Image (cartoon, rainbow, N blue to C red; front, side, top):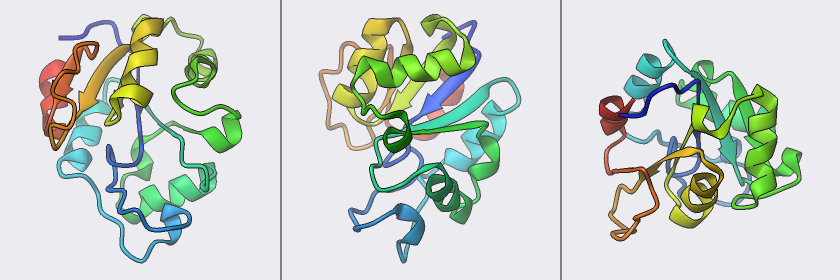
Length: 161
């Protein structure tokens, strides 16, 4: 169980919403899909934590990200939105995560990064002292030793936080 957490940072594509590989911003995709269990998890976590979304989605700014999240009814759970387009850095660059920490004026140990990409979402945040949860729905990363926790269903987060 992770304690003393104030902020949970979620990756967007294939962590909150399914990334089908369509071209252009997700807000404009014909079909969008939420990851199973995300709505339930966010509604419960929102009570005790500040939730934010951080993405490398190079074609979407914050407004387009919010628009896509709204299409599946989860935009209301998030207080902050970060995109590589606006930050000027992409994950796994440490400056991407440092920018987020600076926004909240928190130590890394007060945050959790939840993401589906072991290299981009887990390794660097972990090396910085950020708590990490790898969402590995398809067990793509069987040897993800650096992740503090590894889950394959989003609802498993509720057992960790």
